[in-house]
Amino acid sequence: MFIEYYLDCFLSDQEIKEVLKSIKSIQKIDYILINEHQLRMSKFFFHQDRINILVDYPLGTNSAEIRLKNIENIAGKSGVISIQAPANNLINRKYDKIRKEIATIKEILPKETEIRYVLDYRKYNHNTLIKFCSILQEYKINIVYPSTTFFIDNIYDNIIAGKFLEKKTQVKPIFNGNLWTPEHLEVIIKSKPVGISVQHTQSLYLLKDIDRNDTEE
Image (spheres, one colour):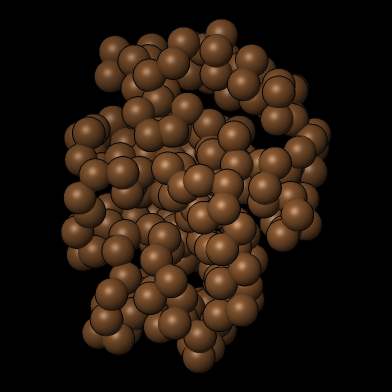
């Protein structure tokens, strides 16, 4: 199980510096999840392989042309990119267009770049999410975030959505809901996510002493 910290997109440069110093002193972070404009700061604190850049976050409403252009601009600058599910194509069931975009993305990015996708269980029904995850599996993309966390997110709904998609399509969910209490952490660990992504230093304090092997099958 890996641990990831999401860097708030509204932070100033000075705030970014302070947060990055703070989180490195609290807990070993496997990945730092950022928006593209934060790359200039994060690269001074984290190795490139441990940087995860969000694309078209949080709504996924940009055109394919803009999405692909943005991916071209960040290609080779991080070990992971996490792409927001393409809302317009998904809502309108344009599955061939979704496949074409994914194929193009895989051509653009270096082979060693890990690709993840960000979903939102509150925007799409279960059948739509299952279909999209099945398409991801066609391209050997296996790791997903069940939520954007941009809106109010219920910890239990986040876990249920992730486990549902794992059972139906064999994707591996990352827990990325709000983690506030030891009781929350206990439930999360029992759900066995592939990773935990948090955005509050309080959450990192709770994660300090966990045995990461507890979440492995």
